[in-house]
Image (cartoon, rainbow over all chains, first blue to last red; front, side):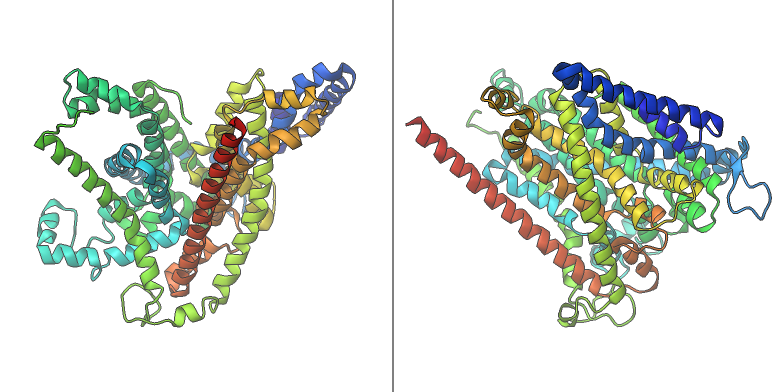
Length: 334
Length: 278
């Protein structure tokens, strides 16, 4: 089945062309006929053995064609170049220069993306953990309602939520008014968080937007892992003269780490690739890698460089996820 | 737990509660802004500064033609793609939780990959494929893209919901003479239907709200988020806030309704079970 999917991807993405593609197609046709034939002849047992593959086929095929094959086209595109300047579409030519361009011209954006995403992940953890904790342990019969409340803001559109932060953070908006009235502005200005009496268009506003938009992805997994904890474990710790904070540190926290792990991935990955927050809340000095990919791909029509950057982004994220999984000692993603 | 609490413990407890309340307030701040500014009377083209109260926007929520059209495009895309994804994703979930077979680990990993790839990568790579194959961008490409990211969500959600499902029920039905098909449709399907519906609703919502992947694959098609993005550079009409508030209230009503039905069903099942015990 997987071989079959691979075959279809191969032809679809033009890994094989000409006569080779005919041969691959013929082999696949034979394979399909054989499978159907065995199912027909083999009776109930064989049919039962083949059932899981039959159920998987359409969905996996869709993912192979529109998730896996595109990654291959992207890789190919990232090594392509335009043969002459009249070409709209670049062709494959082992053009490693796209990767050099990606790093030399947009290294700053790469660094910024990962820095902003990391800070935002930390903030979602700091804000999300207490909230998940209170819902899981002190929610009582209002647990479902409280969880619903956490989800409600996300029933509005992502873009509109981000636009609403423009209102909140505007120079004459509520946040700045409070900061100005309390003299907090000068403190933040000294710390370099606010520049020229503005919080909009600074790294702070972009990170704030990222934190806000991905917060539920942190809260829900932490809640799920806290919810599973047997409260009697905490009681046992207290009976053995543990202080409340020690009981939390040594019993609850370690047991909730899988949730923290899943949550940080679910926040970090989309945050690193996001360009909406930087677009709406940031300035040209806070652009992230997503902005560059989007601009190169859709406006400059420079597909090779955009693909090279996408590929690097994907590679860095995959590697950091693997390292993170190693450190946290879990490979349980869902 | 022991009834005696030191002052220190109590302050610690309160601090955590305060943090949680602040967290909730933070979550709701922009929502309040969206609803409040739907009543604003903006002077210029941008609905950013509060000018005065008006009901005009709510009286004419569909007066912005482009926005309304975009909303209907989004609804259509969401409906079609979420149905396809619900069917394909449920089939994968059934296969993974019902059978033990070679390669299920690989399938699991393959399912998680789209969820752990950044949206820019998914969007731009799919667009590259379409470009290199000379496919015209439009409804089809957007629906293909949406199904692609919804399948994994549906499969993972449905699988989580049917974990621990008692497959011997199906066996019992077949022992009583039902064909495998009949046993599935009469016994298994009704029992896992709530999980499938939840996953379908989730993918519907994901589709309506998707911006990044759609942005790369839409061509000249304009969905609701794309219209907002385009408008945000030129003019932000207050109708955006009105439509957003409407969607918000609608989803809250749906959620409350689902909660009520669910709790009533639980009570009915509980009372039914009690009666049977007697």
